[in-house]
Amino acid sequence: MNFCTKKETEEFLETVPGFEAMIERSGITLLKYYLDISKQEQKRRLADRQRDPLKQGS
Image 1 (cartoon, one colour):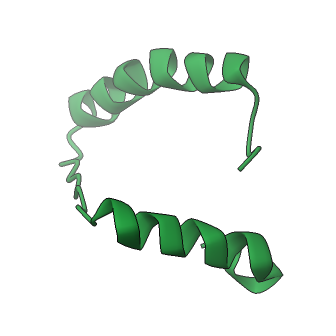
Image 2 (tube, helix red, strand yellow):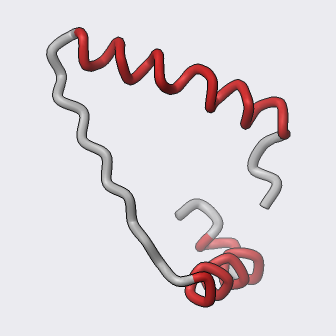
């Protein structure tokens, strides 16, 4: 959805593990939640975002 460039995505994916490790070393417990939705539901949500500007930030 053009949130960022491919280069920005690659930089994000390279830096996040180090950032998360830094947070954990400081004593903060980091919890990650992975939500799983069907491809059909994902497609519907992305289409909604493209049509409705109020949903683009969520």
